[in-house]
Image 1 (cartoon, rainbow, N blue to C red):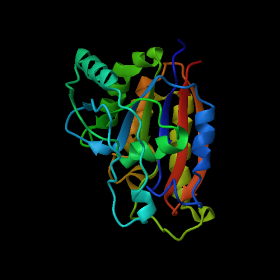
Image 2 (cartoon, helix red, strand yellow):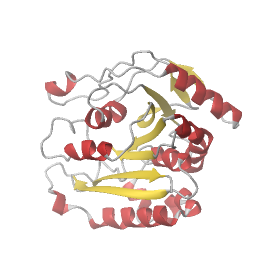
Image 3 (cartoon, rainbow, N blue to C red):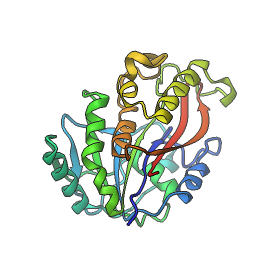
Image 4 (spheres, one colour):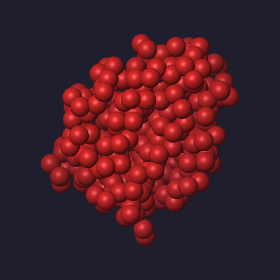
Length: 261
């Protein structure tokens, strides 16, 4: 089997599936360009632990880890089967690469099920979720991807789900896409240029080198999943960018596909 690409998703607000002003349909368009995976290993910004934990849930619950949204959102379910064997294999591979990992049963948080609902609405692809480590750096998460990238040869799609820019204090929920803060583009253009050049050293040092890095990411957790997807990619990956615009003034909706050459 040809190796599957690894993917980074900017999952936006939890309301993405029910808000007609958001580019929800574009996630289905993205999925149509991807080979169908045998299983998905998902790293979401919304499950953080001190060391990697892989979920071995047979039927992961749909976790509504938010409050104050329309009732219709809480009625949504994503009943995909779990992938416990994949989770155990991922934990074992991390251990072989010197990264202590464990397993437990855990559901799918909104960083996982919201984009998957839009990309694979039939919920018929097994999914295992792997936690991120918010107190550890980009290099750690790149190393996780490196340890796991051989899974792609076995039909596993490794997906990081976060947000390419994420500062809720800057957000203006009444803003139009054309009202985006120009510093968002400055950051994303720098990041994407480094991705296109495969400049891993600069990317791992993004907080020191990227323009407005601390403003775009006061904390790292929404960007860390991209480093997992990047680490899982081939050394000579081909980058595809799906730019969906900037919403609420400060939240860029950009997705990246790291495909084999």
